[in-house]
Length: 411
Image (cartoon, rainbow, N blue to C red; front, side):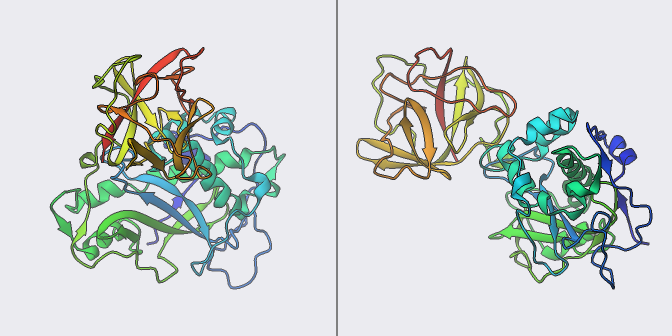
């Protein structure tokens, strides 16, 4: 018997993610009988039939370097409306590529949803907000059944909450970590597994359909669950399906690694007690490089405790995932570079950007594990950021009320 996951208002409530929207509601699809990707004739009503993106993929990450999410759970990548042949559209409506996802969810009463996303839907570089904006803009705007015309009494942005609610609700029915553990497949630094065993453990719980398993080298890092849908993504029935393309995921047939997250170290921005290695300020005499070498995280320490870290733009963030920086010896110190680009102190603020060339990058020095500046190893901010807020980090105190140290953690 085909296993169906139905995303309705009642099921969202059971999952603890009841939809609260100030505005209209998705169009009712009571007469819908065709399953996406299974129609034999054209379907005109794309509010009740997902087209052209009729193959819905709930994609998940297993990030170990840096660590993202709990040690015993995979995390959300997104919900992607692919065509039925493996191709896909992207960024289908730039006018709805909203840049304030957190605010939209809060305004629609979805604080619990946002809180869940801040643990289970995070990137391995950049902020949660940036990641959610990317997923919505690239994929969410391509879901035909969530277009504004598909809502009664539509109010701007209300489709956003349905996209994120459905994605999280679907993710909660797909506990990859538990399904693998039930088959004796658990994270390990020494054990390896056969790809067929991993796929069998997941397929068993996906109505016998194949689950895409993706690897980086020989280490598992992603899974994609494919679905076809009766009706709208907001309220319809998700029917398990197999991949509709020939991508094999790049995993070896044997010797597949499933590395533990707790062996990655340092990647989470969860606040932990940590005594700074150095509290020197003012008249310090920093050494050229200290412990800054290779790849690492820039942890933010204030009041004797780690409070988040520096993200790829150079901002301070406390509820996302740390960026990986590269420290490279240069002259009398070292340069720092993130995925955004080289880092410098520009206008008194720490910034990492693509338009900063290697020639313009600051040559930093260190005081042990702490990043130094001309005034010692103290850096400053207006306050400790919280939630999705990013804090600018300054090299001089001025009127900024919070003092922090930026400490290197090698990876």
